[in-house]
Length: 153
Image (cartoon, one colour):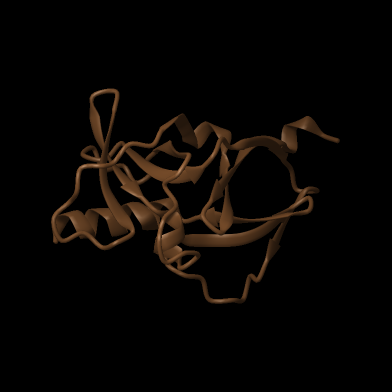
């Protein structure tokens, strides 16, 4: 297999699903703690969590995308992600995860996009199969926009 066509990825368990992200996008995995609430935020925007001096917006990807009505916080972790939208006020965002992510190698041979013609819920870029695992590739820029809009409202 040609190593130049491979990237390292993380398979992150979320309530009722899995999210696939490039390893370079994930900054750190931390222990879940109750976030500071954000006034009038949608249910999926759980609040702000403290991380390295930042107050990072924390989302439930499962609630945002309709995978779950409620988030499971028992033994939950927080995945801190580099924001891609270029907003200097939001260089990071965070997502509730169920346990630690699993490292995986992604290549054109191992990744198959599924349901390309299906309408996607907000926050979803693609649904994929990576080997025998189904996962969701999130639309991080779209999620950042939704977070910004919710905080501004």
